[in-house]
Image (cartoon, rainbow, N blue to C red; front, top):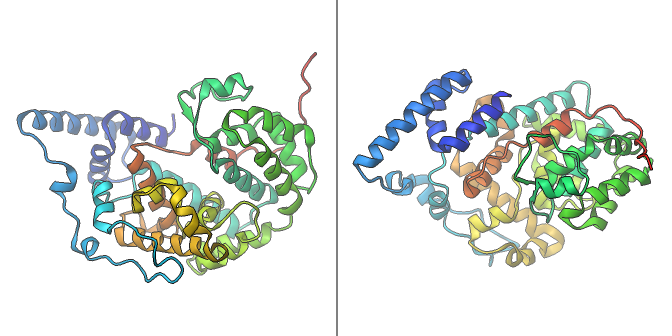
Length: 371
């Protein structure tokens, strides 16, 4: 079992606050077995203390710092009428989140590896196609039970159970013979109708099949040849020598990737200077559902979405979550990931997506089923 999985198991068993407290004391590079023992001891002590003396909610024990209480959002020019909750309320909803948790730091290390590849040998057309199709698979789809996916024909690892997120399921599909055949053809600008049909069939439980087909076809026809441009942008982001606007300029004509989702696509390729303005972030920061935010995001041809992302980015900067300095270039995405998990009481390692992006590099033919 990987280090990230072992830490994730501890978080699932004992809770994020206890694990983060122990990791801060021992250091982020402490051996998992040492961490496990310390976490168990800390949890036991916490339980004993809770029985002897009622504990106040974390938000009452740790009131928002002055910089959060006095925080003011950047001036809005497109969406001045879009009301967001005070930053102090957001801070309390997040239980005083103060550091990027270990499982999210592991995703940050993956991002750093991707950025290193971009800066040295350069990313490939295959990398770009994988990142785009994984991102498109994640949009407006909900997690589905693993057994339901298996019944639809999707090959999942034996240890996968419970709900599976759409981007993770699609990442697993990319490793199947059909997924490999799709990538092998798509990286040269060719279509593989049989492989695309296989993806549509196996991802059916998530819905929006026509959208997935269109995304797979569009990627093959439009992304090969743009990998050099993307590599330069990712490498510049690694050095913090490029603005988010430069990345958004690239994604402006990438089909189905608006300003709100541009940061997620970037993260899979190794760039992390902007957050994702998704349903959960909207609910946390405005207290209102996504459908009410749509009109603001769409204003002036998407300029409202850009302004919303910049507002969220400023808020995340104000939170100033602790993380290793070498991961500072990826702060905005890692902060988003931390907030997303904290708000949903989840531990999202994205190990399936990481596997898809790091591996699945060799194409193969679709194996014909015996009749």
